[in-house]
Length: 478
Ligand SMILES: [Zn+2]
Ligand SMILES: [Zn+2]
Ligand SMILES: [Zn+2]
Image 1 (cartoon, rainbow, N blue to C red):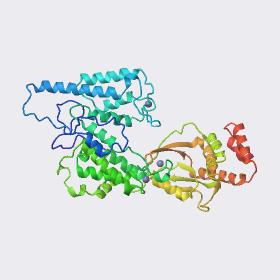
Image 2: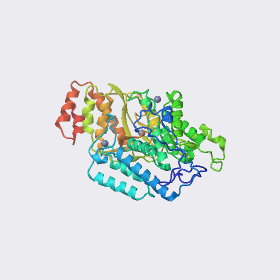
Image 3: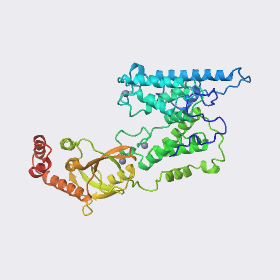
Image 4: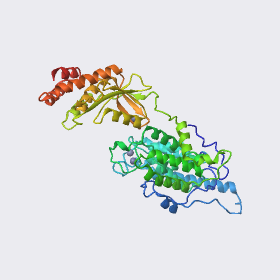
């Protein structure tokens, strides 16, 4: 999607330029007080609290022009830059060589030691900012500084640290706020992209909490759109887009009850940091359309091309070290997986030569419907065969593990944009080989389950033999 940030006419109080801080105080949507430490719980961040804490900064109203405006302006810029640098140093403890992130599991500061070179690189960047008042702090520079302040674990997940720093920079005494910083603070108000329902009313492994691939796609687009000035500064559009966001981020169970409240919170929090402007009829001539949530939803569906199932080629990567034998051992434990169930294989349009092989304790159709919803790709069933659509097997997890192990050389990892996960149960094989493999190990299970001590025999084979030829030995000997 193209970035319209700098193309939108701004009739009054222009959204300032790309860097912070360079001009005398004039922003109407800055606050004087530090809003929080960036680590609020959703409850703490309720709009009422934010509104009380934040006082929008008013533009200077003195009727007298200072004697030397240029001089004063430069001093202001220097002061603001100093304040921005102090804020950065305070919330990014690079000089203590500590990671700035908060560890998700413990909710306490990570504090993993940073490499020494990060300090010098961090200082170099700060020196550049302080020397070059006009250059100011750009989005890229902030991203670089935050990356230098994170350990190897958190480097790939800078979001919560960026949220915290952006909020502190936004509320630090400074001059104009660049639109990228407003966008970053908006990002810290709306939820992060996710594939599961926003409600707390789901248990951790509840599969009904998935909102579905199409909703994830819509969410991804809306999260970008609400950081564009023409959307976030227009009441109608912002409200409509947030409504669509609420609709796509909750599951059917919680949508009606919980989405409106959250949408209202996001809206008022965004309005606290950034007031609306009069809409520009030249940009949005069809005023009625903007109030129409359904129209915006249809528009976004079209923009995202969400008229049907995804058929694009998968983005896939090498699978990493095969865990085939370990998976068989795990599946062999007495309580692993259901006693009875189904193994299945399917392919999807646009990805000929790739087959998914899995197991389910539900009927295969229920499982396939789940895949269609969650990954937004329509499965074409290969196994069970149409002659025996309800074919059951004992210990389906073990049968699956045996099939996976046999085909492990062909395994691939699929990066799924719809459910935001990596799927590891895909294989670069023809439908025929997948079917033959599933038939073979389902048949083996049918024969073996009645034999006494088959578990012990299998365990013995697994411990005795190396991987090479192991599966043939199992097949023939047990
Ligand atoms: Zn860390
Ligand atoms: Zn839900
Ligand atoms: Zn998926």
